[in-house]
Amino acid sequence: MEISVEDLLKLPNPNIIDIRPGQKYNDNHIPGAINIRFATLMSVPERYLNKNETYYIYCQVGMTSLHASQVLRVKGYKVISIKGGYEAYILGK
View 1 (cartoon, one colour):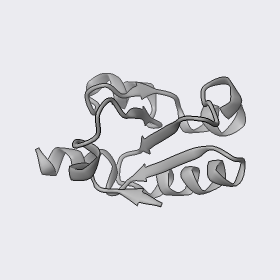
View 2: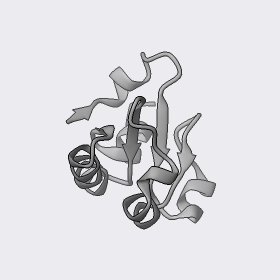
View 3: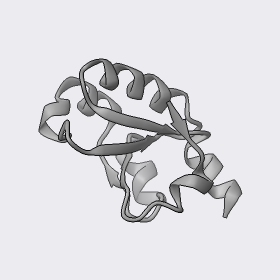
């Protein structure tokens, strides 16, 4: 399941997670996003996610976040990938 950047930006207070390496996050990220690296989120999602909330995750171009969202949904989390990742955000600004 994916959401476009345009639709994401219409949501009130979405839970956004940037799964890119910390340096890329520190360089720039979608406003309001928190950084949880892909490997960390995949190994201990229960530390960061609540099964009663919806999360929107992104990587650089959307492929890793799409994979992560599929795996996390199987585990019972409500996770939606941001289509096109951070690059789609930059291009849509």
